[in-house]
Length: 241
Image (cartoon, rainbow, N blue to C red; front, side, top):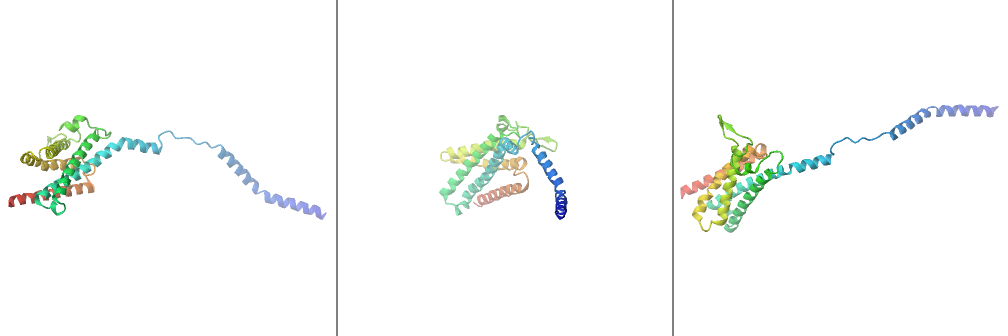
């Protein structure tokens, strides 16, 4: 009798314990079955890696255009400062005459090479299309035309860049070829350097991505202001002489 009562109580107690667990086990089983039936669908389109690679492939000429333009501007400022400093004597306080001349010559070559790279990569850029004639013929381009007081000047700032290139080509070529044979002609032609930096200054201020606004614009103006001060000091020296 006691044994029958004990068995009955054990079965009742076991059913009370297992009853709450049965729904949980059933729910877990259903969730497992649902997870096993989940399928992952691929969204059509390029991956992030492909997007980055595509944009890099399309935009690398633009970065070279900007970088070469910056190198050209910096080298031109240093070129003018070193040249004027050689005449006024300030450069020789830092460098000996032979090193100063070699540095000045290297800066001239650097400027011309960076300008050539700047122009060549414009032909490869997809965002700002330039034709071969646009980078060689002044006012052939229609990029960012300029109108002032009702007068249409066309793409004058692009034209100034083209004219600066031809001026730099003449100055560098004569410096390498005729400086010893025709020093007077070389000196006269060298005055083109002042016109070149004026053209490049306007070209960069109005068209430059990095020198057209913000800190880059401020630094560009300060650099050209330093050249202007150097020119005034040279004129003062020439007047005193």
